Length: 400
Image 1 (cartoon, rainbow, N blue to C red):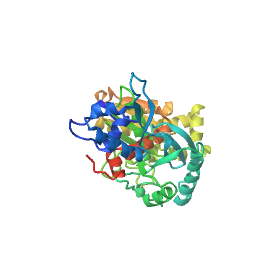
Image 2: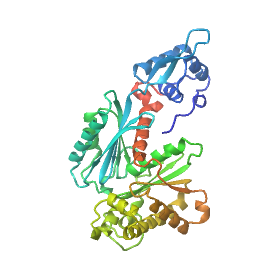
Image 3: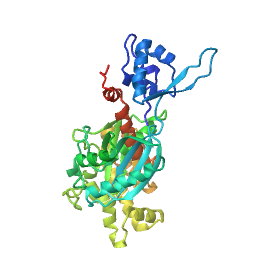
Image 4: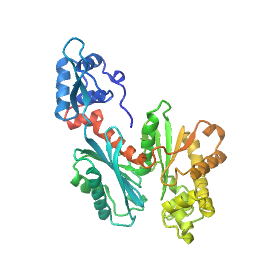
């Protein structure tokens, strides 16, 4: 997960008092800081700093903890962001299963479980099952406090939270239903995001923690469906209608198999996990886990089917890479991170794209695996909860 900017880089201009939210932003950037250090680095008056710290302490956003080593005088208290026992509840909802997890404020998954989901099940029943799964996860520690909920969905989501369920096979869902149900159980802020975009945000958080962070990262989630997410300089690209990355409905041909969107020849109709199972139904292959098992067993028909799917994805990605020229392409999802798929995508991208477009592009499997979407959703929730503007609104203070 992205760390906030370093303390020295975020200090206010001389004579400008930081709001409580911006002061918290500074404190979060350090493992611990004293009042004297805050005074020196922000230029705030002692009275104003004390007022801000009292506001943050009362809201349980900071705490004063251990003392520094004494230097001959009175030991100084360390001021820290209060993340003790605070967790984000994340739900990564897919077409066939959902992953429910408790994640620390630092973006570390603490406990998780998965449940099976039937795409045509009534949304109310699915939400009831998700709440039961979440309650079991949260029972792993009696001291955990849920401070926010992140909900990943296989549908386009715009920045305001509006979700285009009509573009998803998940009929009968709505933001109101999700918020009323989940916030009725846990009355905390809720963030909705597209599942493939959440995967991209999670993978970007891992890249950002290294010196070789990606300026543009493209992540593809290849499982039951096919979707992608783009993160540029740490910010997700959503598009005007939330459809950025919806590559599954890119038409490969004008004819071909019919897609669930009603058209023929879409990438998803050729290469999605759903399409692969349709092509292998004579083999009585009923799940993507079966496909992976047969792949690992070198089954020739399954290998050929999945290789063709990887090549189709690589062909579509070739055009996308030529447009955005990312430094990293991450392949995730139950099928996407498989070595055969990664090799097939790499080969087809190379065949369909000019060398100068991809000469500095790394195409690699997900390093976070099933945790990618979980970490991405938690990161979004933490950013929403603890941005300077959000903190000032919470404290009902004017932003500065």
